[in-house]
Length: 525
Image 1 (spheres, rainbow, N blue to C red):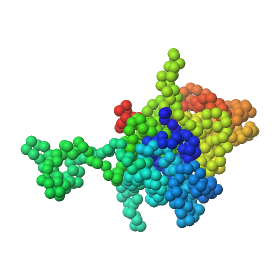
Image 2 (cartoon, rainbow, N blue to C red):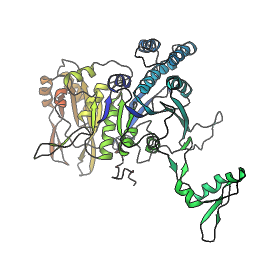
Image 3 (cartoon, rainbow, N blue to C red):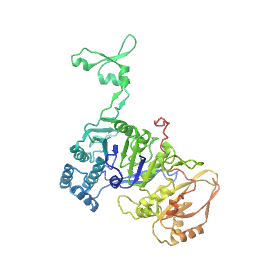
Image 4 (cartoon, helix red, strand yellow):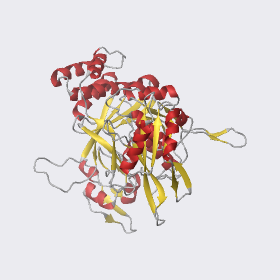
């Protein structure tokens, strides 16, 4: 199978496109019901300290959609729920009432049930959560896995750092929980994961002082042999170190700091070391890894590096575009395009992923523009701006009151002293079938107000009248590259689908991912 990246609701994607018993390992890092909204951070090239755009919403509401989803669980409409899971959800409805927490539980129950369906009989499932709702999520997993022969293996504690400040009301919270389930009790870890022993570790854990033989070889006496009434035997330090230290269920893996080369600006990004441990433990090369909340693509990047096949799903185009850029930065080349020999015109390297859900024709673009979902705001505008700018724009995700700005990029140029500067470029996206020339005048007014040099108007439908109007506003001369650009340019979606992209020289606004070495290890700087 080809690697697959889906843009859309993970429940719909799971039901329509992911086959029964086709996945070896699923890891998810879903919303935690934190009642917060999370923002992605961008570089603004000296204009401001930071710019942010909403990455995802972690607030939940009981509404008609949640009520319909609850009814589908009770009726077991898709046949993916156990009697125990239905009874649990009905009981929690009585206990919690039809409020935000219950809406979250209904959403997660639907998706975990589908994940169980797509796991192979030898499959493993890791659910990343925190104390906000981990107790409810464990009940959900118990009722979906255990009645059908599955098993709960571990509650893994990811301890991600220390906090020096004191809290007078409670102990500082510095860990997440990862619930580990398998689809069959007979499923074992694919690979034993170990850490490196140090001599100090060995002495401390075994409770014995390291001794030295005449030939210089170090050893300790085995306490366990003594406790069983067996004559004590020597354990040699070099043999213990070679075997490695077994991993327990408390993982001390540092969080990604603000200065880390790994950090991409995504609010809930997890370290690659965490995913590497999970993927190595519960899969082999060539196995299929699934992440239905793939965010900035850490699971995907690690799976690619470890030579696994992978499936990723996310509901926001910001995540999809970030993942595509991360793959390109880390591994080189465009994963969505074939490499064709110029002379023979034959495919010499197939594309490395199938990208689904992203508009590929005008009809699907119209469908995205007309999509109504409060949890996915302004997705059409985000897709249009990020696609046209090749991921070099900052999204303005304000719902109303955006000042006519849907995105901002930074053009590289010289000032009057031949010093490099960054000039603002603004984007405005319109979906109406008819637009008057006043739209161009308004965009020009926005450019003047924001002291920006260039403006792009992206329209869903062709607008010849606006193209003509835009020519009245002149051009901009880029001193650094000696090129002239229209001050205002109008692009329609069909042109963009046909391959037209922003051509001005712009700065990166997203941090580039680390380049990976050929030996599949992280590049260290």
